[in-house]
Image 1: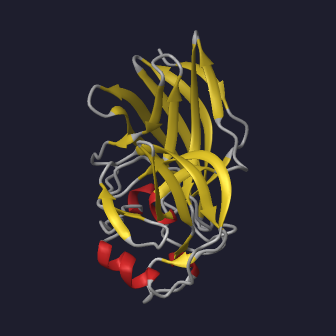
Image 2: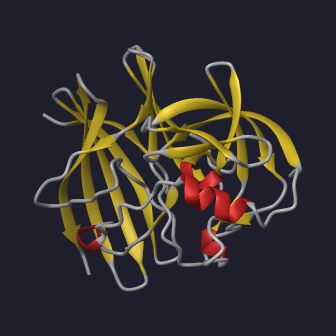
Length: 257
């Protein structure tokens, strides 16, 4: 029997598309090459000014360039979902490439610490919790579970612009001290080349987590998706995986309009 553990009041979380069945992201280009880095940074006025902060973020991307203070690539990192400390964010936003200077392609540069070494990376490839969104926490017997939407360091001040941005979900479990992203399990209902489950942010539609249940060894998320021309209920199962930590799989989508 499914036992209801927690019911959220309306928690508005945006999404990139109206219908999850049509929300397949087929783009594989979420990595930064050394050539892209050198071309873009040569046009900047250096050194950049940074605002000091103390937080953490998850690096997502393949062969993400690690930069020095001159924004020259010194190495790359290919650690999907790696958690790192953040010590600074550039005061301004900069285009990822000179060929596209639109607001959707502008990001901060972010100072990070990896194994006691300082580096800089483009804010496109590091994701942190937003200051205006508190974690959604539930208590199940002795264990506390937490969910919070992450976003990268883009130039958008709101969700009015229709940009193709990813917003993965951070999941924490006090019982086994897990803190990380949810690996997406593709199935016949939903497939995406983006490797993690998302509660995405966009002007087109919004996701609202309405309820959390347990079913066997799984946590079940109930999500209400609303858009200008659509309404849907989505059920997502979260389960522990020996290889990936925890994964998420969309179990059903009920299109109401």
